[in-house]
Length: 131
Image (cartoon, rainbow, N blue to C red; front, side, top):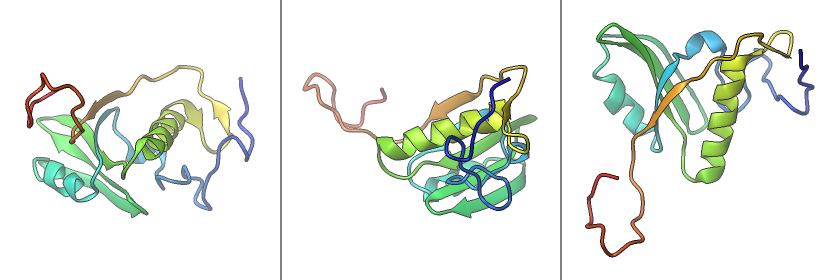
């Protein structure tokens, strides 16, 4: 079983992943990622119940229930570097025991959907297209 040192897995004083400020129990296995932190509230307004709300830097997280399914809405901030940090810390939450810093024996695949805007580089794709 792999052990993750303090330099490989940075945790805060509450033993949460450092950048997101989350523990595994704050996270659903179905996740909606948005860039802008204000969009988390827009998504979670559709939840029947919200069980967790937090914010650390630009990372806003709401976990709740929609039509009987537990879902997390999470902002990533701007840029690919923030998305990289987000995805790595989500994987750590799902697959590493943060107390012992060891890999969990059974791996969990998260269901992640990204909702947001992007630039269009091809002239053949009209503005405001869904891609």
